[in-house]
Length: 415
Image (cartoon, rainbow, N blue to C red):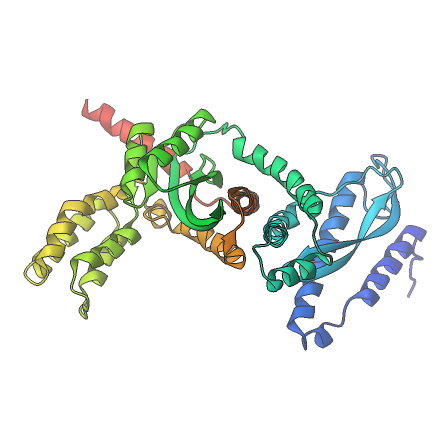
C-alpha cells in the first residue's frame, strides 16, 4: 500500500499536536484534588482563549502560510492571574513586533481587583482584622500600601465611570428596577446604603445593566434622580417597567416614565399576602393564588381569580379583600406575548444578579467608603453585562413587534 509522504508543514502540525498531547495534564491524578482540577481546567481554558486571540491578531494559525498574515509568533512570556480558583501561572503568546495585546486579564479580573481593593482599603484604614490582611496577601501575594491601593483603584474607577456614564443609544422596551442594601462606614458611623439597579431588555432581546447607583435610602427622591439620570443618558422606548411595590419607586416611575405600563412583581405580591393571613396557614390558599400566574391569558386568570375569591372569602376575608383590590397590578404581563410571561412577571432576573452581588459583598461585610462599595458592585455589573451580551438572546422580541402589528390591524378593522 503506497503512502504519500507528508509535507514539512504537515509534519510540523503533526509534531505540534503530538507535543500538545504529551503536555496534557494527568486528569485522573488531578481528580484526587478538586482545587487542583478546577485550576487546571481554568488554566487550559484561558490558554486556549489566548491562542485564539493571537491567531485572530496575526490573521493566521501557527505555522500557516498565508498572504494575509500580519505578523509572526515569538514565543511566550510568563504571567500570573489571580482567579476565584487560585493563582494561575500562564504562558502568554507574543509576536515579533510586540503588537499583540489581550484584554482577557482586565476583563476576567476586574471584579477581583475591586474586591481586593476594598479589602486592602479596609486594612490600610485600620478597620479590618488580621483575617482581612491574610486574605489580601493570599489573593495577591503581597501586602498593600496606600499608594498601591490608589493605583489599583484609579485604573478601575476610570473604566467603571465610562460604563456608568455611557450613552444609551438604543431603546429598551422592558425595564426592571430593584434595590438592595449594603453597610458602609461614613465618618466613623456604619450606615445602610441603598444600591439602586436598573436592567433593560433591548429590541434584540439582550439583557443590559443600564445603571447602578448608591443612595442614602430608597426614597421617591432617590428613585426619581436615578430614573432622570437614565433619561438624560438616552433611555427611551420603555413600554413596561417591572418592580416591587415600593412607594418611592412607584412614584418615580409614574413621574419619569408615564408612558410605560407597570408590572408589580408577583413574587413580592405573594410575600406581601402573608401580612394579611394568620401566622400559621396549613391549607392551599396561597398555592392556588400562585397558580393564577401560570394561565395562558388574562381571561383565564380572571376566571380562576373569581373562583379563588369565592372559595376563600369566608375563611380569609381580610386577605381576599386585599387581593381583589391589588392583584390587577400583578397581571399586566398578560398584555405581552405568552413566551415573555415567565421572564417579565417578576424581578427574579434582577434578584439573581443581586444574589451574585450579595455573595461577593458578604466577604467585605462593611465597606470602608461609598466609593469602595460602588466600585465593587459596578465591577460586578460590568462583568454581568458583558456576559449577557455574549450569551444567546434572552427574549425573542420579534414576538412583541408582531403582537403590536396585530393589535394595530384589529384597531384599523374595528374603525
